[in-house]
Image 1 (cartoon, rainbow, N blue to C red):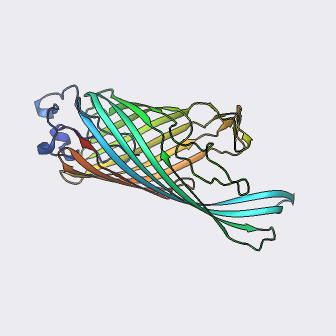
Image 2 (cartoon, one colour; image 1 turned 90 degrees about the horizontal axis):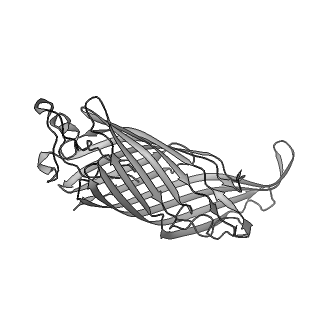
Image 3 (cartoon, rainbow, N blue to C red; image 1 turned 135 degrees about the vertical axis):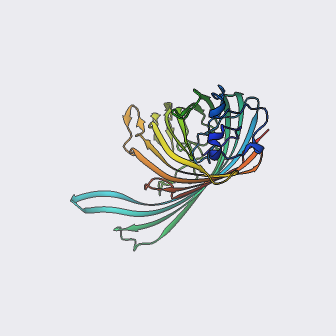
Length: 349
């Protein structure tokens, strides 16, 4: 989910890029000097842009707390074909063929808390709660059933995967060099994993839905922000590694040791200020997910996956210590959710 942080005044040459004017700058945080008055201080924060990715562009000031309630809704639909039988010549199947139409809705409420350790470092705790519902419309063909339609419903609601993230700003950006911010996330498996939900032995469909990945993970990453009046360009690269876990026998199947495929995420975009309080961002987020391995071998039921999302975000300063952030995402690949909507209200204390 996207993240957002309040910021102090930046140098006057970047004032048009910032969400807040000088009157709304947070107290107690050093401001940068303009080019005519000398170099900027050591701990100048990066410029503020409307957040559309999970990685924030501005770190929390030292000694400040940020409470960031976030709601995200995602909708996806897909068609799937299941063939149980055999073929005698190419393109002719003997057996049962089922065509599934799947509609999924996922609502996630996340309470994030961030604390500024220094002007260049912060730590964050994310606690998500997930509610999911899914409807599956099955149309069996080529099995003598007359094409009877069957509808199956499943829901799931539980705590998601809690995570802890640390961020550090490596350098002071300039007119010729971007800001670089390193991230390191540790993800738990407090949510209900996909191997822990019951499966209907007849339809082979889940009767309840998972709310987490079911695996511990570690995710390092790097974010870059470059200010070029009147825009701010940004991008990031992240690598998620999930640790192997012994699943054992679940739903009558012995899965043995399972290792989820690594996930490589990259994104880039541009942000611009509309006025002293409002800004918008446009960007692209891509994810490549490798195949899951089972007992040291690639699982026959999994493939590598490509996800692509086009994102548009808006941010408005409701006060000197809070923002309203809205981001809309449109899926560009088949496996990506068709649409996502994210609403945040980060508040600084």
